[in-house]
Length: 305
Ligand code: SF4
Ligand code: SF4
Image (cartoon, rainbow, N blue to C red):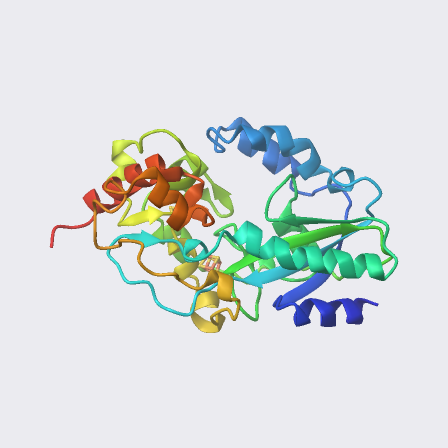
């Protein structure tokens, strides 16, 4: 059965697939400490979801395991600077793109006899990286990303919670980061408190996507040209530099024309134009007001040329 599952997941284009058990999280105390320290900033939903993140068995009633898949989002074309958009955000909204095929996977599980098959596309209260680790798909690197030895960390994690009697995979119990600290050293805003501990309130991804507030000046100066998200702690990772390959999924390819050379690009755009051009992309999350803020700050952070 698991072989059939892996074959079907591969036919959908997922780069890896495994099965995770749903016992309580081993990172529960670390999550509590992280939230208590305020590293989640204004993301109050993380507090609301904490109970279920610590208890994945409570996320979907009746589910006994989670099928976990990895989705490669690395676009084929290199991004032209100077204002930069994170690699996962250059095409269609990845939640939608991922959910389309997770829905097919859930239908397939039902066709095999499942009465429960609930997909989660990198959202909800799901501790995705821990479940992927349990399913044997990789380890959580010092940059807090799931790293698959064969392909690195440019991947989204999707799950389908199900009651189909699937045998869980063998959990990954290795850490192949070794003595490397490249990701921790390269972060321009010094957002890592330590290995695997991120102060999200200092992270460019939070500042340009999640936060609605103006970007605090000491951090805005260090954006290094990033106008939506940041890839640095992935880009410097030797596992990506060595093994990452572009995705074949069309939805993640760069659509072009994001105005990367134009600091006024979003300033001139009307709300109607923004919705037409970016309404189905990740840039919709900060919205036009957020992208105006980001573009202005990102262009100010660039060295004078
Ligand atoms: S995404 Fe960028 S800002 Fe955030 S932790 Fe990684 S390197 Fe630092
Ligand atoms: S850059 Fe080095 S320390 Fe960071 S995740 Fe990659 S291997 Fe681990």
